Image 1 (cartoon, helix red, strand yellow):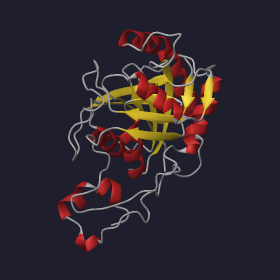
Image 2: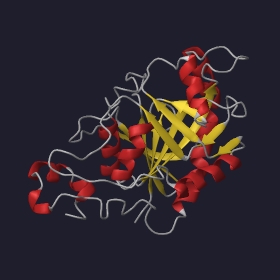
Image 3: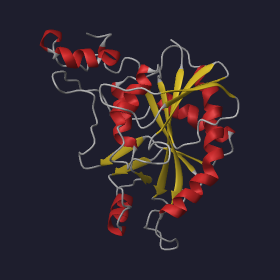
Length: 287
């Protein structure tokens, strides 16, 4: 099985040095349209597919992003590894704006308004999610971050809030009391959907601010976040480019291949035919 690396993040991350054969494709899915066109390219011999999470020009709030369409479109494009590049607020003094955090856990504080599964409407599945990040891919990102000269925090919990407003001070202190490391608005349901799609998923979290808990820093605002993102975009590009050879050298399928094995509860003859057909790229091997 060939390795195809997907990158979900901000605009500009597809402008990697050495990227060739660049083209765009407009696609749709059974779940609607993804946030933008898919951008395809090659880095060496490795195929890559890029998708700006919020659309070019940042048109969608975290709650409006069509996460199902985004992940499904990447799956249909052959992607079996997803690097999620995400701006986050730091909940820990040692995680300084500009640092990289390779999270290994999530706490979901969204309000149920985001579709977080491909299943339902006559086909039921329950995937294991105790370890929501692919440890193999997280290791590749750790090695790549160090090669790129980043200051890396290995592990940590990402609180996923609804937004679009930033936290209250009381909320920020609550999340700190839970031992969380960073806060953001997007990585669930992405990680859940990637697991259902049998795609190895890991987050490259780029700290941009101290949320609102730190007495020595101003409360987070968009101008501050954008300034740090712009300063870090070249670092993110270097890390992604450095990670690709590590991923390409992985022997066999991606580690999450087979995540649906034993997860589908619905008997094939009881499935809604329309749903079964729509989910064929995910469940066709099992049904």
